Length: 446
Image 1 (cartoon, rainbow, N blue to C red):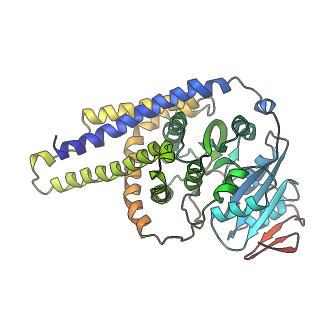
Image 2 (image 1 turned 120 degrees about the vertical axis):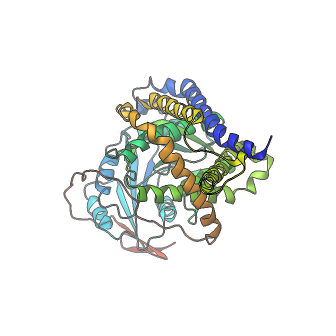
Image 3 (image 1 turned 60 degrees about the horizontal axis):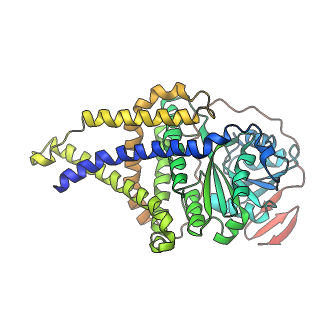
């Protein structure tokens, strides 16, 4: 068979094949694991013990969100927890708001880092002073469901080699077409993929917005890496290459804000793409060992998707050139949808329907966004293709060891959060400076 025909067949059949893999895997996971848990009404009562859980919230310029986040954390259905918020050199009023909140929330501790050192450094700092054996790490805009902790802890009780459990992020920003498309994306792509990956035992990444870690596992692997653009992907691979298990809990719901502008979405997805490539390059040599064979499928899956992006770009290039230059017959193509496009579009809608069916118990209004999913293949496949293509040279050109610091993200369009009265601060703050840490006014060396 000619190479050009192989290329075109690969571009068409690869996403089609993977869509059915995700659908079959998601349904299998539901029937084997998820359906049983739907009968449980009180997950807290199912736990054998209630160990202390440290909730870590790294913050950078979160003045609009941090009040409702801390308030929601204080109302979680769990008796033994502490909240550690890390103000990582915010330029707005985040630090002052956190200091004031401590008077109202006795379980809250605040760390102030004078400079923007990145999310990984913020979580490493919090992990060093945390008292809990389990660390629940969330973003500064994440609102957790009340039963998140019990649902996650049951996995740690079930297996002593469980190093992390990732939750189920749900989209709060749904006022625009981009926001509605992401509702379907998080179900059809993220939800189904994580369910399927759990079937064959390895997960590409935990969700950075909501994940719980065993402290002992973090200590063994050296915590988070400050130079990785996506610390969540990196920590997932570090855990699994050290033979810790990473699991997915669909009932651990977390409501998050996402970009609703093209510019904001581009920046976010470019960072995700760069982070994925960065991690796969980092672990390429490590995975050659036979003992890492359970990671091979995850690695191959991602690298093939990168190759697909470049192959698709080549097809678009050939089509563009063909508009002005007479190409050989075998290279003359069209991007106008024919039966191929109809089949892919139908499969995509079927995938989204199945994923929404699985998530309907967690997001009761999810099907009202199904109508908008017809635009998903065009909008997001093209976006992911472009970000992947641009990410590879940027990663290769990036200086090795360069620290990944915060950049304020696009958090979508929404009404302002309810205002909580500001209360005078007390002396419970933990001030972090470089190279000293101040706890209640006393300097401690790192």
